Image (cartoon, rainbow, N blue to C red; front, side, top):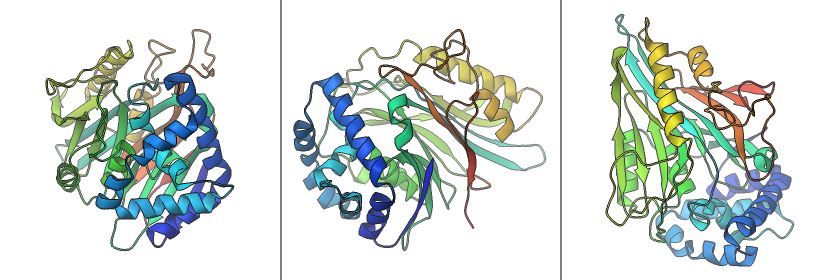
Length: 367
């Protein structure tokens, strides 16, 4: 996975991103042009027009993000327009509810009898294999803000990651109708979380900005607390942590790809992935089992959880068929990376590709 360090003003950060990942940004644009045409029958010019409907909101509420996107477009070159980069960053909103990803996440805090604290948030990010080659690991350092590491798609400001305050964020897709051009687009919500000092800080900012523009679930945790925020175009409802039965001192939350708590009457969730509920039950069960006989989670233990293949190819570790081959066609998703974030140590452990396959592994942390 390409790793890029970006530093400076918002425009400079964007320009470094765009210039160092120019081919991958073009790859993201080509990938989504094809996908939007396939799933939503949209031409790229229609995608750009829809994206520009968010321009006034972004300009008014997060102008730094707009300048960073402008920098990405200029840095990528080859005729890349600002509207192209805005389209990538509002791709969830443009094709809301049409994606076939199947991500599974969890957050787990506990205090051992010795008094030591553990805090983790982790996820397998599942998406179409055709986008695997366009992923990047960005490190972003800007004045007055936390340093952040994010694993994302080239051209997007952020996705899943960790900041120097120990705030970690994850994303799960939800299929529900509704789109608001006066709320914060999903991937800008994720970047906002990664620029926050705490869970409380992010929730206050999200509330001030009106919520999220389309359906998704954002998991956010810091060393003290965690929450899973089920978002729609109309509301944000928190799924709070609860104690694991096998570890009364713990606080735990997990999510997959369906709403777990009630939402406003005008939120209409559509049938999505049949495996979403089994995956959620499975990760609860695996973590309950991991907790028996011990008081705290561990990186090694969570690697086992996220390697689980029960129900494959639609497992937590997504993409293997009964013969162990990976689903690689354009219509199915596969685990493209696993990330386990130790919030107390402020370190992230990344495995590129399916956890049970060979592939690149690296750590991200802060000096």
